[in-house]
Image 1 (cartoon, rainbow, N blue to C red):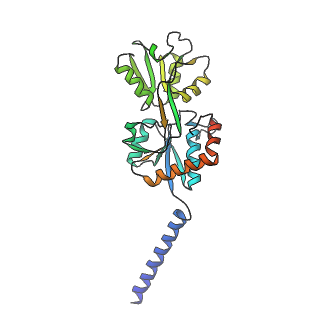
Image 2 (cartoon, one colour):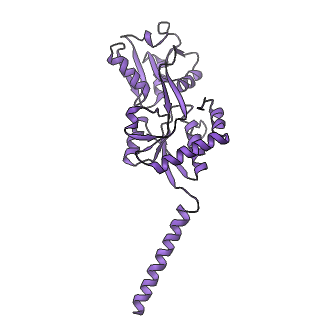
Image 3 (cartoon, rainbow, N blue to C red):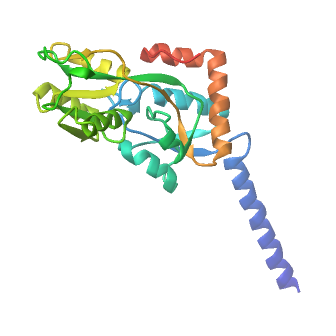
Length: 260
């Protein structure tokens, strides 16, 4: 009996200690730890620090501010854009904050936060190109570049399917796409306007934007379907940082026009 009681007491103490450790790591006001991912060739939303090489950008600051407000922590991963939604669905990451446009197709795969930016697609060409003044001037001889899995790629493929353009070349990273545009490997790029403006500003002698914005899509932060607890925290945090001015600070830092 004494041996049994001793064993029972030790087991009970072990359970109490385990619960204490669990409370220390997940309690005391903490709302958890989450893995977020971005594809960092999408400045100013998703990029890398030139000196450290660390992930940074508007989305990075936005989600970190939301996390701080809601008392959860974020670990960031670098991931190819077309792998973001499958990674959420598989449970390999919890959050995708990477300039994701909220589309009907994507809403069938993941749940989105409230919109935090309204974007529009735009066409970029070489500065020396005198023929293309808008999307309507892209013709059957044109090869158009876009980042794989983006609304820009969707628009370019629609032009190809309609017979307006010759071919669509897709890229995992926009940095390579814009280098190809500078080198003449492709004739144009269709991509989100603020990101395109960022790349063109770095090569103003080689690149230019033509025409008006093609489409307007809101950006949202994506989580796994039916993860209501996490989605509610993100939306609540976003509402709070809009109210307390932190969101405007982030917009001003990255020269982004935010939503009301």
